[in-house]
Length: 461
Image (cartoon, rainbow, N blue to C red):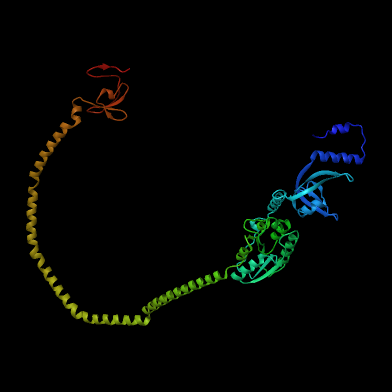
């Protein structure tokens, strides 16, 4: 049941400070009792007596409460009370009467797990993302053939051994190590310092920031804002190799490149020497083949050019023309003695034929022409007579079939307007139809007023 403050105010009593604090303590303890609080630990003080005094604050720092853990409980749960640690504290609320201070007496503490810590991480991630820390546009490409690789990790961890082993096997080169702790309360500051030292070196081409696997808590240093910003601001290309593949820290998101393990990071920053040599051998083979083909083509082209040059050599041309000229001179020397006699004989033959032509040819031609003329004079009369008889018969037949003969006897042709249909039945031209009537001489334009047939007659309205 809630306390009735109206009853207190209505009472006519004056309290001392001690009585007031005692009454407030009783009210708090009675009303709230045992409870659990999830918060972040701040301002831890370990007293000589063994008691722990600390402050619990919520995620956004908008509220806090003083807490105390007595020596007996501190011996058992004190390791959980670390500045910045998200915890779930079980205890009771009370009021310390001598000072009138409101506090939580903690009798058990445990890590908050996915509670406040996860919320705080999500808030930080959202903040950094809004500031462009994870933007791909800011990420630097890796050098193709680095000469020096910087490694930021623990000198005693497995990560440096894995990195050295892979680099020695794939692409031996110079390595610079900046030692740092990779977990614990001091790790964030040491990582930031090691990155700063590496940034000052002009001989380092690429940096690997890594550590081996571990629990989620072991990776907390790589989720702190200071380390993430140091990675984002780092001048050399940086590869993050934090934890195992299932773990993704804020450093992984801020780095220029991410590798699942330190070994994979080493493979990422350097090429494979064996693959490079194999590629060079392939290129050498292709180059040799290309040069061979080019030389062969050049030889063929040179042979063709020499052949063309030989064909156009002036000395060869002069020799050929001299031979042709000799042949023509020989032919010219032989030509008059062989050709002129034949030409004279052919000319004499033609002259004789010309002399004989009129006397032998004209008389038979005149006789044939006279015969043809006589036949032409006799031909027209019998043929024309027959043609006139046939023509008269055709004219008679045509006149018998011509519709004009019917029209001349008083018949007419009726055509319906406007389609020109010849009207053969009264149904084709009802009353009101416009028609054209063709007579033996001329046409009439009419409108049908009525119609009738032999069986019945009717008049259209």
